Image (cartoon, rainbow, N blue to C red; front, side):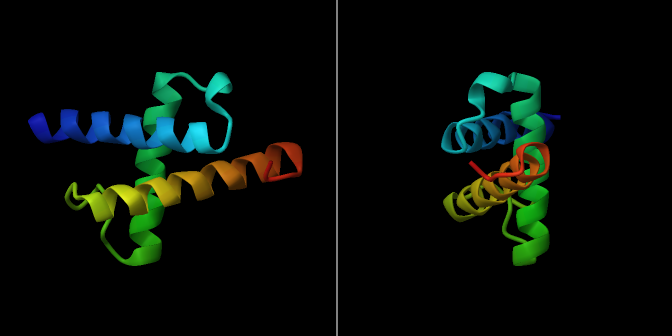
Length: 85
């Protein structure tokens, strides 16, 4: 149970940082930040072949998850607005 709570907290932080980088923070709430962080971590895990916060939480996995979340937000911006921003 503690692992899930920690996973949600770290996913929220990753999603929040990614939204700050992509300047979409004003459009997102905490729930969407958590979703972006977790899905970004999943994407990073697929691309890297492991090493995301879904495996274990380290600085390297945090940075890979952040990169995955930024890529996810860039794709969403591209689809919604036609530009990455």
